[in-house]
Amino acid sequence: MRLSEMPADWPFRALSHEIACPPHRWHVQIGGSGPEVLLIHGAGGATQSWRSLLPFLMDRLTVIVPDLPGQGFSTLGQRSRAGLDPMAEDIARLLAQEGWRPRAIIGHSAGAAIALRLAEILPDRPAAVIGINAALGNFEGVAGWLFPLMAKLLALNPFVPRLFARASGHPSRVRSLLASPGSRIDYEGVRLFSRLISDPAHVDGTLSMMAQWSLDGLLARLPALDLPVLFVTGANDRAVPPQTSDRAAARMPAAEVVSIPGTGHLVHEEAAERVAAVILPFLPRTAPVEVHSKS
Image (cartoon, rainbow, N blue to C red; front, side, top):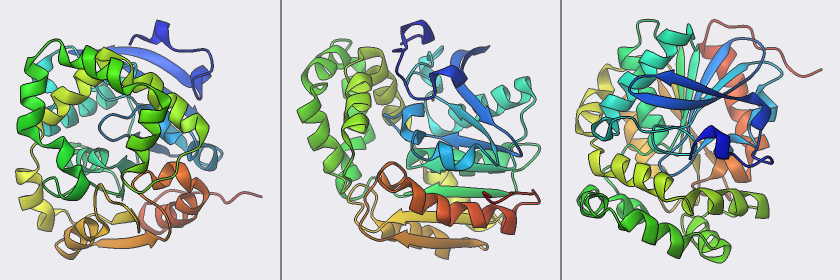
């Protein structure tokens, strides 16, 4: 979808910008005030994924919230650049073009892997990374639906994205899909995700990302990532089991894990206030920025 197709009631629509930074055309939401923080959604999501968390951040931080290439309202300009390394490189190029220097990066699921890769390659390295249900395992548990070989086969068929969008975009099917990784999402969340998953271009972009996804290099380098990292897990996550973050943190010199009981893979949507209560104190403790509490 292009930005011109964005529904009038899309969350934080007034913060949306369309930015050309080759090879992609990006949709980015920018708002708030204070130190810059970059938020990266997971595979199949978009800026709407952060709608519940942003109000807790924007009165004290400047949020930079892009849609990944080919997903949401960002256009994938080159199909071969949907994997982990190319996407991180292209986000780094976007940040440099716009003069953004985020002091922290927050990523959900696969977005957490991109956040860690950015921490490796950005010339102005962020002071901290926060991974929410970080997908740092090779497709464990229910996350096996992301299996790259299957995604490659599906992505090669030009009819699959349209057929999948048509079959899966009904709210009842979306509600079941979102419940499968252990999350309970409100009506608004189901409605917004239904809008995304019914768009063939979004499905195609997500399949392209899955088909090119490889974590082997990043996982091998985790012990060398010495910046502060906070992993936030939903205790009931059936898509990326909490043990995935536990194992990653055990291999990193400055990582810690906080689990939020009674939540699943979309913990930042179903329990945004509890997530904010964990990550906001972490930022001033690890990043040299001033973060004011609400009065």
